[in-house]
Image (cartoon, rainbow, N blue to C red; front, side, top):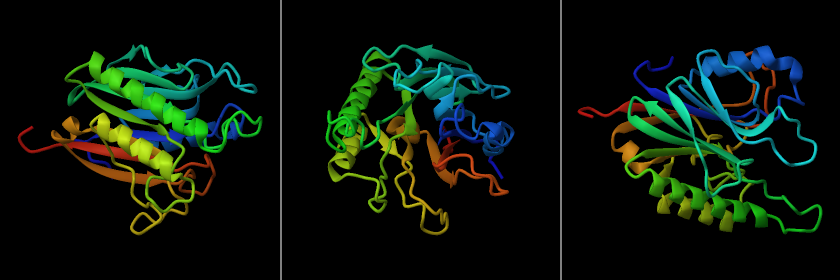
Length: 255
């Protein structure tokens, strides 16, 4: 049961619903509604997905071969008033940013994908994890840029970051993990989804590579709880090959 006083932000990779599991749109919408997030960061998403009561901003159409005009690497959906924020130091195919009038005040939300570990390997233009590490550097640059352009604003970043941060999951690279943790620290962000969700009490069957990090200034005003789910409905219908994660932020006493 959700806490009505909490502000809930969630991220989930929908696994390209425009081309996969197209017959599952009803179940997908019901699953999104079941988790009751105030803000969704959706990746490998459908830019025509309509969530009742939400407004949406999306990345530019992916320029990768095989993607349709409907697809988006990332979208942000909000129940709260929202306007898009231009990213001056980032590929608009891979990330999108919005300024949301949240119960904690103006809040920047950056949703994105950090490219996968074998990007460029098949055509011989990169080694495993090379472009992933480069992508982390690009993310760090845009997070710093947002901090400079919007001083005093809290920031939440999230999406498919394509690596486990729990020091246990196999889909990770020591150098890439260090780079991402350093980027969080330099941008005064705290990752809230770096625990091993395969352990009790969560007990999921796979490790999470989708993450949410929150500015430390926001955490001074709010307590946080994290919940996760596998990409299946309660009835066992498969909707995605990724876990979803939701962070609930509740005002601290006296805030």
